[in-house]
Image 1: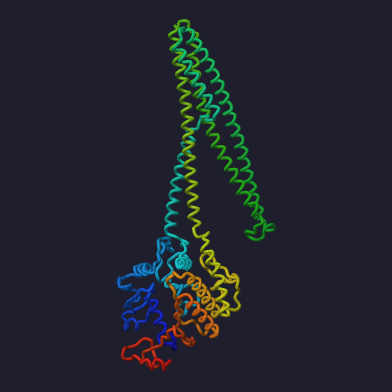
Image 2 (image 1 turned 60 degrees about the vertical axis):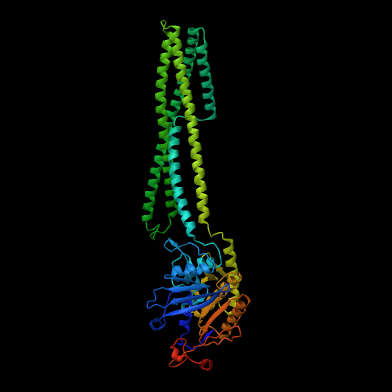
Length: 575
């Protein structure tokens, strides 16, 4: 406990303690001119720790030396110092996300405000750090202190960015595969029934070819084969003529439907124009944007979008049908020429059996090649469909991973339990401080924003009740400290209160609060550092009263020249 009158230098001493722990130097010119450094002696797991922090002529400069158990390291930046101190405390700082979306790591100065309330503004908010550069910094520091997973992990963010890039690349692959698939499926009937028919036809054609090769009566066999081929050719021509007729009928029907939809679009446009006229009548809608026709406007937009989508679908279907019709027309022309060749070979009396045999073999072979080519196209289409399906499956897996990464921290059961514990403990410490006119219905969100019956600390403070704000801040830190001390392995086992606003707190309330903190520290191997101007809290054997020990012009001071050092008797007498 530091106990002395105002202006005796209590706050600079407490700030030096924080400075030795990594807080930015924030001292007046007189101290920077006359004090070269501050040395903090501490203990970590029974091993001695000495930190020497230079008080440079500029508060922005940084130099600190850490001597831990005989090993000395020097540090010229807050980042290096923080990494070293975290390491010797067996803490692994997480890779977090800054307010700008880049990688950021916590400093001692960002974590210490959980255990250090600065005089003045430290009692007006639940968390006040020298700088706030980490996204949701208060919540992240509490998560770090309590050993929980970060809310915004940079590794997770980087993985999320990588997965989103992978999703974009996968989508491009799918679009390309869909184009290939759509192109290959034009004019291909890949149904099981057609594939079975083609397979049977291939086998029959192969048998007919084998029969021609082995036949003794070449002329008769060839003539019979040509006759059968002619019959099949006629059947193929009829089938394709029917399909072509149906396609042309479908295209004509699509054009009719499209014309009808165009008419509906024009009708919608006329209705919207009429609506504009109605809106212009002041007797109907006196106020601009009165909202009377809002439903009609929304309905118009939805219907128009629906009709335009229908037109796009019809255009795609019509385009496919026209391409298929063109293919059928070309194939019918080929089939007609093939039929004419067969007829000539059958009707020509001058053709020998060998000529007819060659013609039959050539025709059967060409037909067999065509059937096998069609089977190959069907197999290629199936392969493309399988490839497209696998690409879509991988896209779904990527989307699942993105969803999982995006939900990190939302379903954090450990953090949920901590928030519930903090609610209960905050109510306990509010009662300890006799905090009145504030709801005990406390809510703590994922960013660790405390609300009391829907009111935030800022709202309560803006109402002129700064005493209530101070009590709430003390209650929140009491709750945080109690929850933190529950784990005996956590290293920051101290709470520093730099001169609470005693003009805003009743002495009895502050005494009760400090007494309860003392009991909690004693039970959990922790320390309470407290500076006071008016309230002289009673101390016991295990406590240390730090009184000003230098002679000042009007009162004893905490800082001074060696020649102005007071004797122990003088220090005790002055207190």
